[in-house]
Length: 249
View 1 (cartoon, one colour):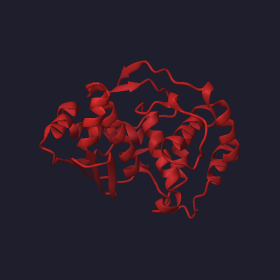
View 2 (cartoon, rainbow, N blue to C red):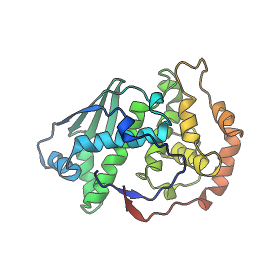
View 3 (cartoon, rainbow, N blue to C red):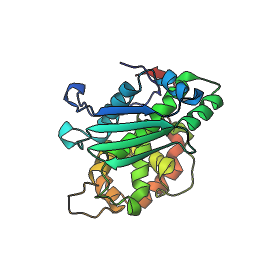
View 4 (cartoon, rainbow, N blue to C red):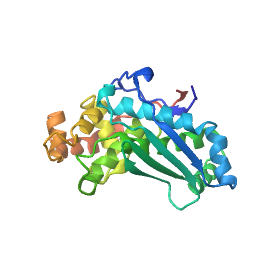
């Protein structure tokens, strides 16, 4: 088992999906960058295929409670290449494509003063976001309409796994803003209002439930209107912090 450096994030809502029951996808890893940037990725991850497979299980333990609920992802084509940007996911189950920028990794490595542990944490953090997209529901392909909540869930999973610093949350914005802004709000609900919220929010986007997803789903899950929850979050977010002692998992 590989050791990752994580922030200590404790949630009772994690499922106990067993590794032996989980369908581990095949991983086709290709590194198209033969320069020092591409070599750096391999040096930091050591075994990229294993990192990807282990992160799949971690993501699914946040998103799901039973292996029968998990979408059938059979293969992940993961490519490292030199380009502007960070990472991107394409395809739909059973085949998922993920790209990662060696240029971004090199910049991050320099910013962290060549800290390999922090670089690995960033790689796996970005990966956990993209793998959430691989496994999460999207209300039947409605990303163009509800992309904010979908991206928020992806960053919320990353946060719950310890790869994004929840203590950096700041007031302002909107719960519809996606990414970190929405993610920290969702995690706050998970921690303070409704344990299991991330799981239930994802389940509310099942493509065949006959319900068109709206933000009213938050009220149906928690019993409180989303605007009221946002107001409470803005007022009380500073009271909720996470122990940032480094641990391994």
